[in-house]
Amino acid sequence: MRTFKIILVGFILIFSALSSLEVSAQCSMCTLNAENSVQNGNTEGKGLNNGILYLLAAPYLAIAGVGFLWYKKYRRKSVSMNIKDSKINLN
Picture 1: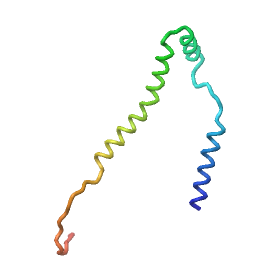
Picture 2: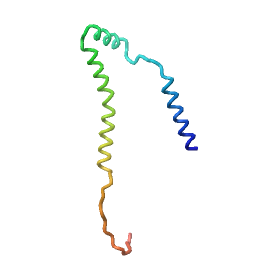
Picture 3: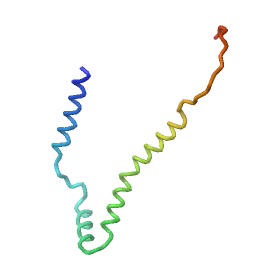
Picture 4: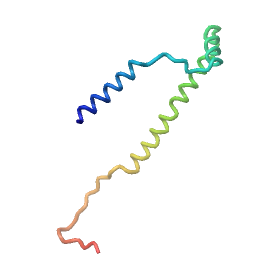
């Protein structure tokens, strides 16, 4: 049953990767602005691309920061405990 699930997930991933279509993710104003700035030698298109990369990286940096703080707070500390062989009364 486990191998069936792995094969099914692999098939879904391969199928979704192969069935992608080309899409326009920018609005028409942004597309025209970027194309014209590149043709005219302006740096507005470069600034637009840098802004897109900045917005793309922000969630990943936030998740990495939360993960690092969680790791630092909840990681196990190696502490040696010397417990005698006597019975422990929990009451």
